[in-house]
Length: 274
Image 1 (cartoon, rainbow, N blue to C red):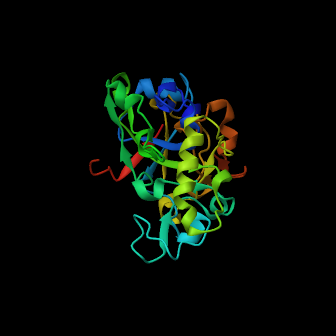
Image 2 (image 1 turned 135 degrees about the vertical axis):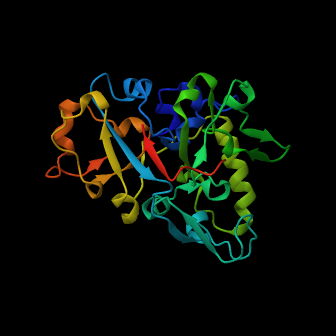
């Protein structure tokens, strides 16, 4: 789910672009493997919910050519981050690139697990995204989704972030258009003229990661949940952690006979999603 739809509305705020958070999709987890009553109450309810644990970096990674990423022939261009192999790696599935979507996460490492920094500095909580460089614009797309207010420090959060932008400026006819592409893109961002075509992003789990998944309910609910889905029956949706908390009254959705559920330090090997 995009940052703009999360319970912490401050996360989607940039000081200069009003609706920037709609392009940032976050998969949110916690490093705390102990019981947390505040987390259960915030994201599952008083007496319901399922907690799912997964190994770090569980998503399938795909390989793409530079043309597939940028949507035009880049053979005569030198692109920062591309070692000349004409191969890029991303957890964003092929259907999004085929639809013309563009992601800056390829350059910034946000597809890997990052640790949230808790702060009270307004310049970090509400950063400036677009910089006017005279006849060009600079875009600092890696400033949102990494910082949260100190009063949320109890969440001990880690997350994956995908910055997925719409295809409206893609499919440029020639390599010389790349600077114009990004200048137009930044200009339209600054003027809130772009809208995300995606309400969520679906990612695929590596089979090995799915088999390592664990699930548990709140300790005072033990014995109340008759069935939990096998790990291979669960498909994680790349959105805010609310999606993997299910109330007891809907526990039938977790039964194997039902359809699959749609849903900067060394990271812990296993994370529980909230």
